[in-house]
Length: 339
Image 1 (tube, rainbow, N blue to C red):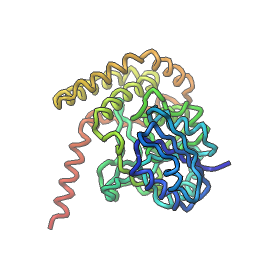
Image 2: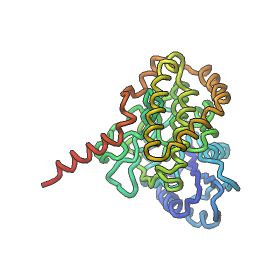
Image 3: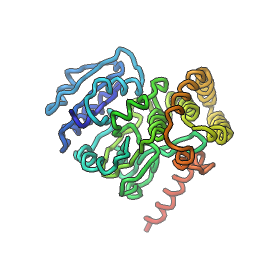
Image 4: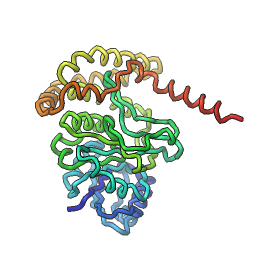
């Protein structure tokens, strides 16, 4: 059996996919297969993709329409033979020892069900794109370390809430047991939701600082596009509803409602309130389906509510102050380096 199946979902990734495949060509560790699942790209050319793959032959699948990141990844898993599933964005460029570092490290963490990479920004290589996800008790989540210098990243493996699926490894058996990515999400927040379910099922998510990947980031949809805002705000509600266990759901629900109100007012002031309002309305229209999923998830939960609660960030104002804190840090840093 192949150790690692690398699954690359693509959508109009003509400029970045060749770089990703070139980086995979250079991998030191070679026990892997590559599965490319294309989500209805406008000018799909499998022969051109194969031209970028000299040392391996990828499995290539093309959908006629865009089924979303979650669906493409899940379909790739159906074709995968690896013990571990590595999801890699088509705009994520791994260092040559990315797989080798995973291979050297994963056995040290027998409880690990998912391992996340050190992801830096391709256009600003000295800045962090993410070292895993933080989940706040309000139901909001964000990339750990985003925008901070790379020298502030942890240097040792440590537990995180969830890895960023732009470059992450998942144990196949647990991925399938918890149901994979939720295809109703289409895109955005699906890795946080999956990480939540993995934690509830008794698995652990580990940050692996030695596995380094450069990420262009939102190359297809735009980081703050209407598409991104809509799916983030809809899917964050579903993640909270499905996964927040027992008494914690009712304890943190008022905080969740307050956070929704604050973010709605923020976007309303910027002339984008309709996007968030539509996201919340569409989240409500599928509440019955999400409650059904919640029953199944909570029925299979094996960790205590107390242990789950310890995984959350409990700083009430943290989700609203992320940009302010980063700007303040950068101003301080600039003062320190000025002569």
